[in-house]
Structure formats: C-alpha cells, structure tokens
Length: 309
Image 1 (cartoon, rainbow, N blue to C red):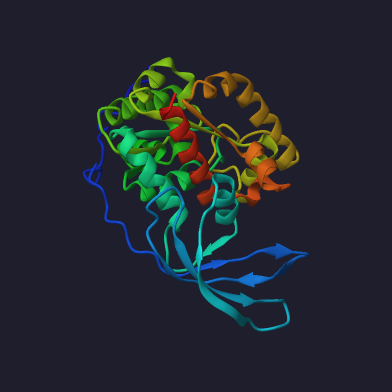
Image 2: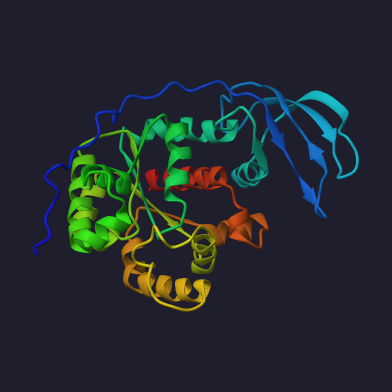
C-alpha cells in the first residue's frame, strides 16, 4: 500500500507563537559534592536581574550540610556574581529546583540571545533518547517560545495512535510523510522550539523546512543513549523494538547502525551541542550527570556564536 500523509493532519489549536509570561524566581538549592557528601546548601534569598552578562548581585544564605548533621547557617550576605560561561554551566549542573522553573543564569543568557533570533524557531535534532524534548522545554521556557514535539503532533493527527503503532500498522514511510508535512507547517510559524524525531534528518526536504529556523544537534555518546533507552525500555522505540539478546548489547548495536546512516545528516545542523565535550570541560565522567538546564545554556551559548558568524 502506498504511503500517504494523514488527511487529518492539523496543528492543534493550542499552538501559538504568543510568548508566555515569565514567572518570578523563587528559592534555589545548590549542592557541591565531595566524597559523596553534600557540603553546601545555599538557598537563594534574593536575586537582582542581571543587567550585563551574568553580572549582578546575589544574596545567598549558606548552610553546611553533611550526611549526619543538620544544616547550620554560616553566613548571609550579598555577593557579586561575575561568572564566565563555563562557571554558569557548571553551577547549573548542581542546582536542584524547588519552586523555580528556570534559574537566573538560563534566563539571563536567553535574554541576550532572544532579540537576535528575530523570531526564528529552533529545531532540536539528534538520536532517540538524546533529550530533545526535555531540553526543548527548558529552552522554550527561557526564551518564552512555544514548545512542540513532532512525534506528538503526528500521533494526534493519526487519531491518537502511538509512534510504535503507526510504524506497525502503516509503516515507516507513512510516518515519515506525516513528519515532513508537520515540519512544513511548522516552518511557516515563528517563536517555536521544536523537538524532531530521530530520523527527521534523513530527508533533504525536512532540512529545507528547518533551515527557516536554527537547527541544534544534541550530540550524545551512543553508550549513554543505550543506557538511557534500556533503563526505560524499548517498547516505544519501533526501530529498536525487535531482535533477541542482551538488551544493552542489542540496543547499542542497533543505535550504531542508525548512527552510521544518520551521522552525516546530523552534522548539517547549524549548532552542535556535544555532551562529551561538556563533560570533559565540567570534569564529569558520565554525560548523564549534566542537567538539562546546563545543556540548554550550552545550546544558547552555541546559538549566540552561530548568530555572530
């Protein structure tokens, strides 16, 4: 049967390019690890809006915390926050959110980048499990853009069927045709952060649509992807949900095959965010220790560099 685009393919009526209101920041908890212990607990009691790049004054109440002792306040004072980009990224990786949805560093960088985007949308590309949806939501909140997931739009258009069911019932070509139609519709819109499917990059026509915005490749080592996918199961991943053997070995083999076909296509992205490079810079052994917020900040930094070329 010839593959075709779903006749019911429409963007949901909640899709809007209007910016959402940014909520004020609340308290933050920062942890610095040493020898497996949490040494510092620093709730932010007051933050002034940064007027220049990451410059401002932050009032911190510093508490000492160990595994066996309650926190005790050491000091509370206003301190200048002159942080370079690497310090901001590393700090964000240690932040545990309470009532805030985005910390000050992300908002500050987003405020610098957003005017230069001129309303252009952002398209996140990368292998399955690379965090496109999670990081995309962080970016959309920081930039006050709307967030959309291509797979979710396709599922809605095909009557609520899951991606796995669409592949099983209609085949991959049907799914890819609908994916292309979704990207075509989204390319005429502005101020979006779009999470694309892992295979969206294989069709040149999709790149023509995404070139109307800025594409960002989340480059995650295959070993880390395999661990993530195995941890949650492959049932929702139609291209991985077959074959026998050890789950990790099987997943790693299939991911390697997929990357062989897609690697060059991913490299067409305007911006590359390498988690391996980030981990080396931050001193992490495991890229999974890097928070989505830190990845979003790195993406904004790389977007800024791209816009300056």
